[in-house]
Amino acid sequence: MDKYVIHGGKRLEGAVDISGAKNAAVAILPAVILADSPCRIENLPDISDVKTLNYILGQMGAEIEYLDRHTVLIDPRPINTDGVCADEARSMRASYYLIGALLGRYQRASVPLPGGCNFGVRPIDQHLKGFEALGCTHSLDGGGIISVSAEDGLHGANIYLDVRSVGATINIMLATVKARGLTIIENAAREPHVVDLANFLNMMGADILGAGTDTIKIHGVQKLRGADYSIIPDQIEAGTYMVAAAATGGDVTVRNVTPKHLESISAKLAEMGVAIEEGDDSVRVYNKGPLHRCTVKTMTHPGFPTDMQPQITTLLSVVPGTSMVIESIFDTRFKYVDELRRMGAEITVDGKMAIIEGVNKLKGAPVKALDLRAGAAMVIAGLIAEGTTQVENIQYIERGYETIVDKLAHLGADIYLKQEPDREIAKLG
Ligand code: EPU
Image: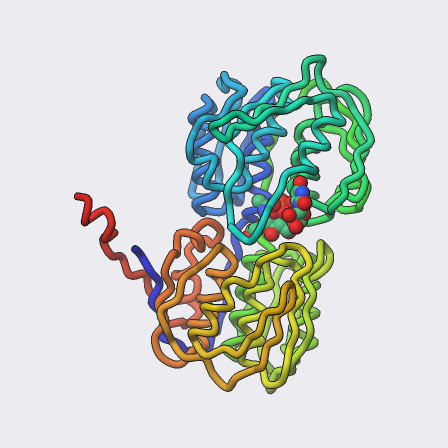
């Protein structure tokens, strides 16, 4: 029952250091399974999704040694199973990357169907379509375990993705990197974490061309060796602090970032009247005057990311005029709007569109983090609200934001973690 308690109304000022990218880390850790010697991964974010994946790899036999808080040495050689039974795998979306990585190593894999943030149906048909094209069959057992195997080994193929799926692009790359022949993924996702995984695999000896464009070519290789690799900065964590700075009328330098990855977010904030100054690896965000309403449509990269949608909607809830946010990636990613309404926001949702009438201020209230980014949005709402906001369900937020309370407090926010005994456990105990 831990919660964040926020007394709103403080301007954020100063500098914040951004951690390694969650969605790159959760692809790169499974990729280590493909190596035939140890890998050293740096700039790993200290978040619960990473801890869960390392736990699962450890259960499978990998030797894992943390050299410091953000650097891990993983020896995948002792892994002795093509199956994942840890229940933990059900708790996160990215556990499906274990399918691709195990297929690459053993040509078969059994993994619990993935969980993750709940914003509508999240099918994996494009992953399975890719695996089938590579020579695999699959079956689902009663326990929710999906088994995929290639009797005659995996071979290259031309795969056209019907939707530009990040997960399918990454999973197919993992499965095919050691397959026979050439694989071409068309209509591939272009997100920075897709490129980061390709760079890591290429450092291991893979032959991948075109990551970051919509056509990726993978020539299968026989062996991949261990590599030392530093994960890219987290685009969405950076964007979240940028929006928090703008929302509080603050002046924040977001450091350790790749400004190019932030362009769609910077451009939208600039359109609203926020001042953005890009450095080599930093972005300064401050307000020059009142902000203007705008329209935001989420798109695949390099468009405005869906993972920034709840945060920008929250900012727009206190910008004068009528703004519009269109969610074009996920079907039901506006559930958190009910929580914002409890704080006084005036937002109407019609299918994939939110119409926002900017109000003067939000009012503090007890709210819930309904998923990771919706949780980040509740924190931003608490920072700008009058009075006290308590954000519950913070385990979602801790899946993807490293030390968010400390980072915000360092910027001047009045926020703390309130730890309370879990009433359910207390009752049972
Ligand atoms: N889709 C299909 N079939 C598939 C796969 C996807 O129809 O086989 C659809 C989805 O339902 C969705 C769209 O395609 O409508 C895009 O889904 P995608 O596969 O790109 O999403 P994902 O791989 O499940 C990753 C991130 C999400 C992020 C999305 C979109 C990871 C672990 N997760 O999810 O991150 O929202 O891409 O960019 O990389 C987050 O970090 O908070 C988060 C949810």
